[in-house]
Length: 99
Image (cartoon, rainbow, N blue to C red; front, top):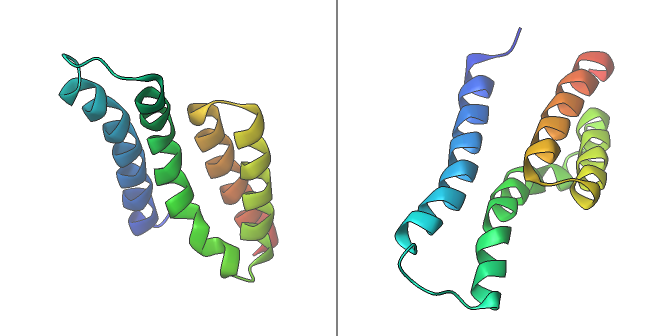
């Protein structure tokens, strides 16, 4: 069973990632963006995801380390949504199996 604090954290991470993408476009809808500015807008949600998983780089839990490697591989192959789904599922399964 998933801990309620974990579920709330996942919901806030998803909401934050979604809002960083949507609010940027809503706030800037009447402005013309340069290519550089568009690129920056595209990577912001990924930065939110990285800021959430970055602390696990210093942990010694093997399930989290393997899940992080899977996430990094998924991020190099897929867009944001599949990467988030893959990372959450891999972390959950590995924690269940290895912990």
